[in-house]
Image (cartoon, rainbow, N blue to C red; front, top):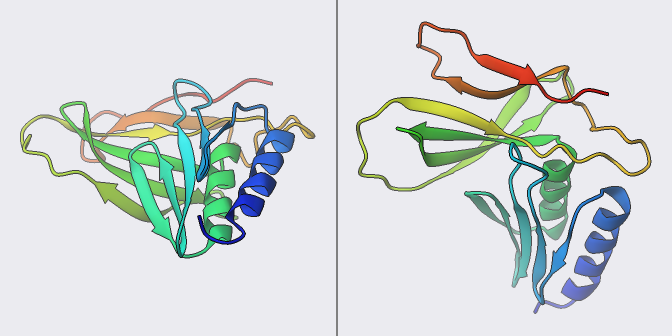
Length: 168
């Protein structure tokens, strides 16, 4: 365990528990937080020598900075980050982390994929986003009125399907 890792994990766990109504599972080297619901995704952070690993469902990234790992994990919990999951015949093949910018646009950051031999089938995209309410404000930060849950590829003749993200 890297020096200072326990202190970092203690502070992160306390911040998550104080800020969000989520279950936090602590291990010797990290934290795991279950999805906020069906449209969310599990989030985990593991401290390693020289940085940390952040895993959001099938998206995994090794980061050299603990602060960057903390920021991504908190963005994933607050709804400031989402996953765009590319599928073929309904099976996931690639996960892309997208962050919400100040204009309200989703910006792709990085992708992780798996090798698949399934080359046939209808391609699609599923968007997953955790919708955890902040303890103090009761708000989901920067949440648009309509949240895209799933859509077909852009070149399909029918429009995207949308559902209300939540009601207040």
